[in-house]
Image (cartoon, one colour):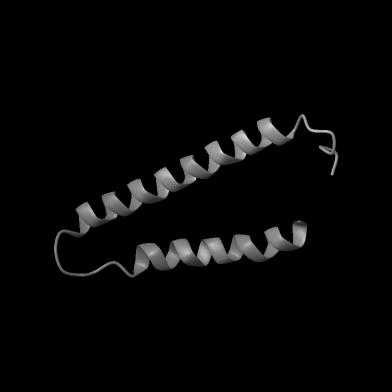
Length: 66
């Protein structure tokens, strides 16, 4: 699990860096940055909610220690 975290966290940071740095130059960049920030925020909130739901539903099972 720790090995996966060590692999996935740098990939997440790279993806976020590329997501914000490769925005189109045409158009209103402030609106694009606001939209990108809103999408990332909603994604983080969604991941947090799914993590809490998974913890609450599987944390009380017989094999929760695994």
